[in-house]
Amino acid sequence: MANNMAGNTATRAKILIVEDNLTNLELFMDILDNIGGYRCVFTTSGEEAVEIASREKPDLILLDIQLPGMDGLTVGNILKSNDDTKHLKIVALTAHALKGDREMFLEKGFDGYIPKPIKMKEFLDAIENYLGR
Image (cartoon, rainbow, N blue to C red):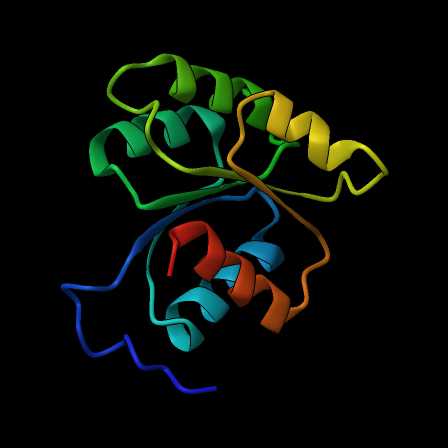
């Protein structure tokens, strides 16, 4: 797969990945950075996710729901209720993949939903879609 955005840092979207499983985190970072050409920032903590999102204003947040401490639903609620961060696009990236889960996350204010485990092409296509590219 061609990486046609990697060389131009001015057009590379910044994605915040919030994931506590280090294997998943490495996989998502590798796909998004090395194959997709995105700039990635990451954390394994919900509390840090709120801080990073407020400071960095990423183009997209991929948010695991089952995090230790502050869970992803709480993170999403905090970000969507703050005037400085309510415009940020937040996508649930979760193993919650039962019928109705997608609708539930959208009703809770998430901008999208990607079930785990991911498939690389579908994952990248979904990221492009959420970024409006």
